[in-house]
Image 1 (cartoon, rainbow, N blue to C red):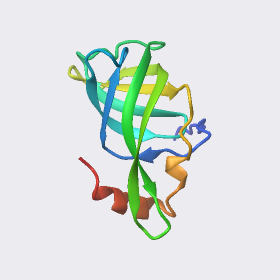
Image 2 (cartoon, rainbow, N blue to C red):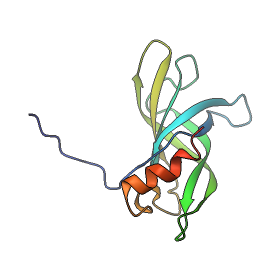
Image 3 (cartoon, one colour):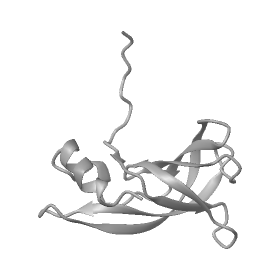
Image 4 (cartoon, rainbow, N blue to C red):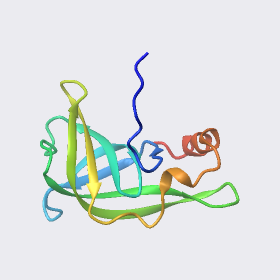
Length: 129
């Protein structure tokens, strides 16, 4: 069995929610599907024909993140973040997975706010689109 070293400094929140992105937000926006998010970056899937083609490309994103309250409820916090693409992986002929690093961190750590992974997953089932 091969072991891998975890290089992430922060736990990610995995959920499926729309994300909009563009190289220039004054132009046509493309829609993707959020895969996971941390305070410093996110990963999302998009159509292979969208303008998410190369590492180093600067893009602006608009998305919402569940922000959990202490009483087992949550609200969606919306953000617009500029950043650069770190990686683009081909999932298949129609879909790419894009990883972006934000220029400005989110004000909280999305993956570290739920008490347990199971509880977080159960709560997010209600908001998955």
